[in-house]
Length: 180
Figure 1: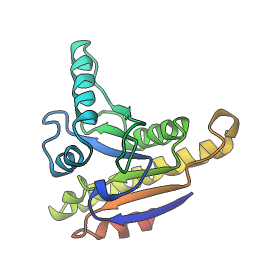
Figure 2: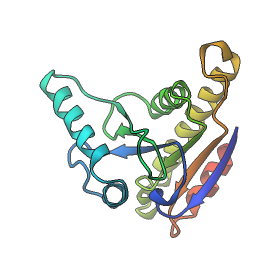
Figure 3: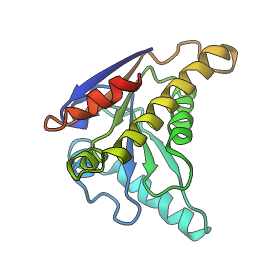
């Protein structure tokens, strides 16, 4: 599987599915969420809000939400929102998201790290390093598991993972490359 880096806005990336964070305490308030709404409309977000409300009503904490819209004419058919305040380790969540993508038959997966970049800007490099390590471990684990168990999954493995970083923060690329 190939890992490549995309510098720019997450909505410019052509991909089967986008994996991005969801801030539960203030959903859809950051720049990335506004871009998604602007480009793909409110479908993904209205589904997400309904899901969050449902989970709250039944007393459960959501960790990951997958929304697929095969009819979309946008750059991605689905979004996996990772809830930002989960208790499960990020490596596990990325691993599960990767497996989920394969079950859905997606070949190109984009992962936005735009929300984590601010850690480098605010002098929290240790935290940024731990996040990147966890993401890379999750991707590698998912890839290895799918390769070892091809009969359990779609015949065609994901071909490419695109890591999305902003123009101003190319340091994230160096971090990822150090662990790939």
